[in-house]
Length: 370
Image (tube, rainbow, N blue to C red; front, side, top):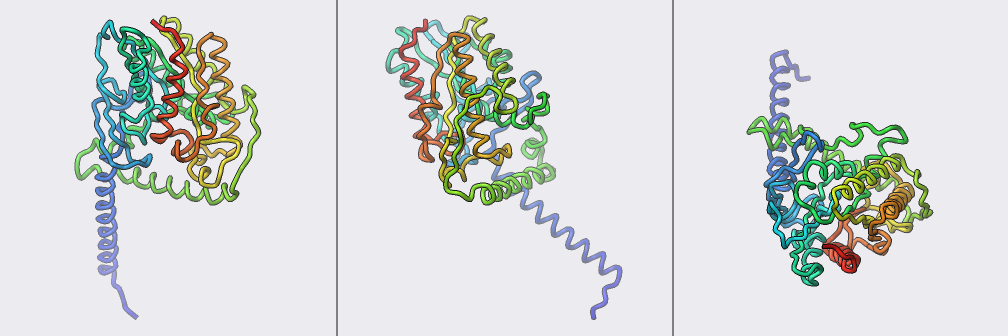
């Protein structure tokens, strides 16, 4: 039997501890190197909660959601080219409001439905003697309340002529957390400055800030895989189509926020159009489709998700009728989308972006704006 004296025991413990710390340090530095070129950076905003950090550029050859592609952020924190101010007299400026489904992780800049729509409207000379600018005002994580705040504090000062509102998923995601209780700010708090300290801090201290990020992402992956195995062991799941206005928590808040946004835009004498959001979630999803849908993000079942989406679509349509504004039924006309057109519950592939852009174009073309 080997005897270990107190000094040797301390030495072994220290050696193992140092080895573990060194391994963790090396792992976090590798993670920082990997994440740094792929993460979209955010910053706090005094009134909007959070915004994309201006003047970024990310280039990646990846096509998955975790690998951003050809991302340029302008000085106003929006994806795309710089916005000229003051606006030229020959410019008709469109802003498309939404979350990551508008921002479009998977598509390169020229493949986003925002850019395709701009190209199509200009080619058709939609408004004679006017150049059409379509500005991607989608911010990953934004719900209608965030877009309302963004309009108040940023967009209304950028001389918009038309606003297209394209929301649903993030409102379901946040409002589901309320579980029927009154919503407070903590339920829609998406920005966490500490998550990005691994980039902001200098070497070697950035390793300390990378540890929670690393474990959070590993846990997220494991949880996602675990939920798929437990919840989606059937090839197909079916749900009833209903459109009751209060069928998911927070539906009333979604309705009120959207109403406030549309009212404010109209009061500014700016044109507004609302659209329902394309989604992979439908009454009858296959096993592969279910595996790609982010049920785990809000601990929601397929049936709940489907009903929530139908309810949100019903609310958007109601708002359009109340305010006598155009409604573009994208959700209703993309129910046949598969993984070839949409990567998960809401994020379009380039093929899906082209279809959505064309549908927006066809619905905007008959409308008369000056």
